[in-house]
Image (cartoon, rainbow, N blue to C red):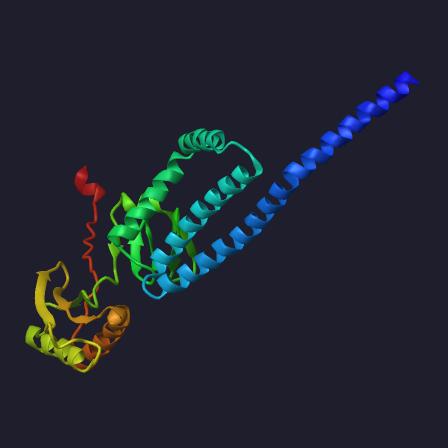
Length: 282
């Protein structure tokens, strides 16, 4: 009988302790869960509003800041929820700090990319929509993320370039200015009329509305080659018209030269054949 009452007594104590713990922590757990759910909803809502406000002004900065703000706010929310349950936040923060140090040492390259992304967004060597040439690729910038920049090439390839490489290496922002100079070279034969060829090139440029009048196109003899007299042709165009003008002008000037009897020479080589007489050698 005593063993029975003793076991019942211990069971009663355990039940009372469990009920006491439930009464003590259940409200905190429920409140923490509600806080977590509401907090996540508010963070997502805030980040969404932030993205709408910033996207119109600077799409590149919008994606970067919204991603960074979302990570920071969610970490703060988790620390607050842990504090509500009763977890000591000081030790929790210390653990996060130690883990952050270890992760930082293990991910030095990623941190360099993060710092590179910050530098790109501060100094703005390029922005979303610009055409750049970097790391051996030429294309339009589609996204600038926290760690990587995404470039879409003109042959429809998607290139992901680390921000650390972009911030520490030379790059060419092709679309930074509204106008560009279109550099071309045309060769004519040594027997052709230089002034006539020059007037034909000028006429072809004047007939194309995409060629800007100011600055005035430059046409001059650039060099006397092995087989041709080479003209340098330097018209100015809008940046978007550069390559269409370049391609069209080569075809147009070639056809104009053919009509006017101006030759475009091709490399030639004279071969002299000597016959060796074996009898003379004796």
